[in-house]
Length: 144
Image 1 (cartoon, rainbow, N blue to C red):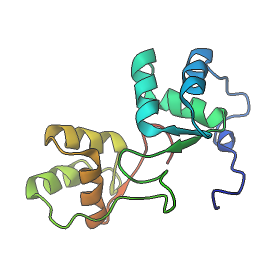
Image 2: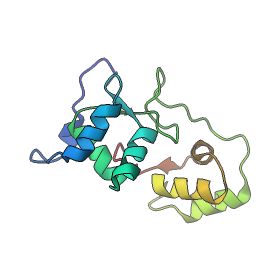
Image 3: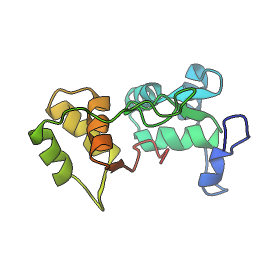
Image 4: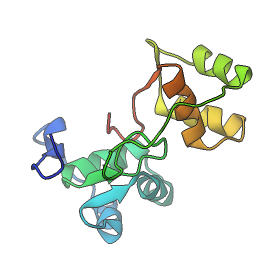
């Protein structure tokens, strides 16, 4: 589905899902062109002391689009994804990535933890995963 077509993100959730008014207010203040960047969503979660998943769910229910994934996996124009496969891979990082896999996938949360442990940019971990053909899933915000 291209971005010009209407997409209902709220459809991912139960029809009777309630919107938290505090999260809604914070999102509404920071949404731009119908998009909420990943970093902004995490900032809102920190400020309100709620889970990133609660913020992502509310973004969906408000039918806004998550943008600019900090792992480079979605939300960039025009190509959607900007992460590229790493040219070189530190064997220690690769070992930790492989050890953290669940069902042959690395969770977004684990990718962030590995980045913090090795003092790497988050996108460096996702680029390693790209080179190793490892999918990152699930997203902490519920995007995928």
